Image (cartoon, rainbow, N blue to C red):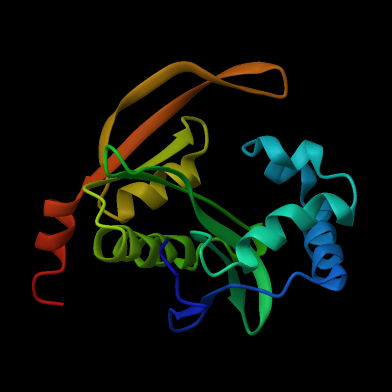
Length: 186
């Protein structure tokens, strides 16, 4: 089992494993609830988050050092989350999922968080491929993958149901050899 770093400093923000307290669960719920319509158009779990207690299971998971995910914090305040939502040990692949408060969009935070996570995937977990999947209508999320150098592979038609509607999912990926080439002189 891999132990992930408790904190990853990314300059103007951090990826952190936050203590699972009720106050933090309440804060997360209030953040999500205040942006419910914005977030629910892309994230299936938002409609299932109806009280602070609904936030606690993810908060508890992220707090564990062996869990492959983090909360994104700015000045100690949670503003988003990033995880490996799927890992295949047998195929050496991982998928990154993320969300960010709309108040923090446009600052390059998620693009840089993706780069931090891919370093974990390729260096620590020895993955050979990392994917980002996003609803084709979610232009901001698709742009994150493009800015981070992920190659567009195509669309999974009707792959997800979101609020009762079939949605198409764009798939982008980065191979370890591409990541190594990007980071050759880093």
